[in-house]
Image (cartoon, rainbow, N blue to C red; front, side, top):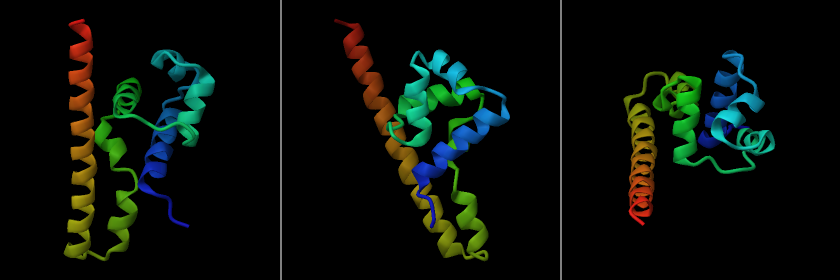
Length: 117
């Protein structure tokens, strides 16, 4: 069974964390959440927000776009060089990226408006 893109993103985060020798407890502390709350992120029980993705990316010192590319390699290797399939993958990646940017802009605007209060 193929994993969806979000599951692959979570798996990539977990793999990067482990390869860096970082414990779930340590990253949870850096995020300001409990270890149990972080475990829920890595198991997919808690939704990963754009803000949290950026925080994890910074803590792991891995560009967030590298984390977002999780899973695309599987598709690219299986398409036998088909330009049509590559365009579809690139479009999917672009749409996810644009949604993340939009969400980040909305969160930034909200934080700015709250700071003015």
